[in-house]
Length: 196
Image 1 (cartoon, rainbow, N blue to C red):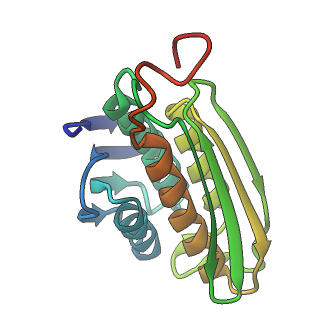
Image 2 (spheres, rainbow, N blue to C red):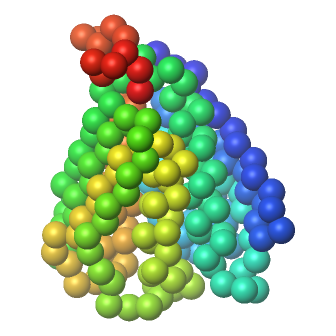
C-alpha cells in the first residue's frame, strides 16, 4: 500500500513551517531549519524510518532555537497523523533498542490516538553545535501530542551527547516505521474499540 502522504503548513509570528511526509517513502529528505545539528537529526529520522521528508522552517533564531524546534515537532506530528488516515491495517505498535557506539537507547510507540510522552535520560552538555540539548524533550513532546501517539524514550547508557541525541532520533524513526507498517492479519484497526 502507498500514497500515505501529507503536507502541513503552520505560520505564526515566531515561525513559518512547511512539512511534507510520505510514510511509504525511501528515506529521501530535504531539510532546512536554520540549525545544522537539527537538520542532521531530521535527515537521520527520514533515512532510518524510510520516510520521504521535506521540512522548511523560517524561525526566530535571533531569539533562540526553542520556537523553531518545538514548532517543527508540532507540524511534523500533525503531518504524521494526517498521512496515517484511518489507520486501518497498521501494526499500531513499534519499538527499537538502538546502539550507537557507547550509547544505547530505546524508543516505543503506540499510535493509539491518545497523546502521552515519557522520556528518561539526561544530557551533560548544554549545546551540541548550535542545538540546545533541552530542546530534545520539547521536540519529541510536541511530536507525540500533535500526532496523538504514546511515545516513550529512554537513554539506557551513554556518554557523548551527540550520540545520545542521534540515537534517540534514529530509534524513534525505527519504532515509528514499525508502527505505521501494515500487517495483513489486521483487516480493520488493531483495537477492541474499533477505532484508533
